[in-house]
Length: 218
Image: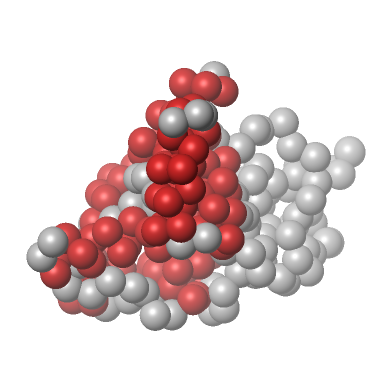
């Protein structure tokens, strides 16, 4: 395996897909160029290019990883038509303005924000909740505490990709890719379905894991 292929595999193990795939997936639905995306998440355009080409493997700043995760979940909402084009610039501004890592970057998807209290209206209410660590718009006269998740009821279920990422993050928190591969090999003879599960969520690409999830859960 050459160095580039090795670096790409490391990115998949770290992020669930290569960073090139991430950028190509999230930028178009949000109307962002590669350079504009770099600006939103707080990277220089050359650094993002090096990560996409696997000249570099890992994003060193946890806050940048947090912002990239937020942008990714925002793109999922845009793709699902759960976020209007006119809401995207404001949402990106909030992500761009965040300065620290979210409290749980690996498992916190964007969620719909609660509406204003009964009998009140506000033009500042946005259609989704900001990830923990970003100040969200609140009903007039109120404010959300910075750094605290908004746990109001929501009718919007998490996307398949968001659920899959939580499962992937759990696998990668408890075992390395090599350990998961060995466990899958050991299980393959007696429980091929379990072996497939381990490989799909433990070592596979996010897109393949989403396909597996939708096949068995849909």
